[in-house]
Length: 134
Image (cartoon, rainbow, N blue to C red):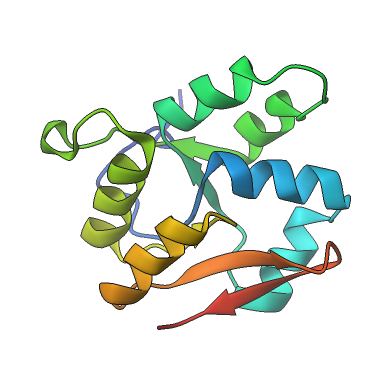
């Protein structure tokens, strides 16, 4: 029987894109083909999410956020205990530790990433993604 190493296994040493709640909502609202758009802008297609983002997405009503598709395409990562309980702090900690870009449209989170010289991916003009290196 094959071992499933897709769930937060340190053996996996791949580049991932961390998904922020508002970044995923922006992708859904823009009807982007996330696989194609990520490959075109960053060369990365593996998504990663943290439990808090998943909780926030499940709390949003009134829009089909395609959460089952997101789960199928993503690795669920644990967050460091020292990162605290705020979603942005947890995303920032995971991004810092792994040098993963974050898919986000959150201005304050992008400012923090810029100050730390960490990359992010943003939805531009509701039509494509842009990879930003600070």
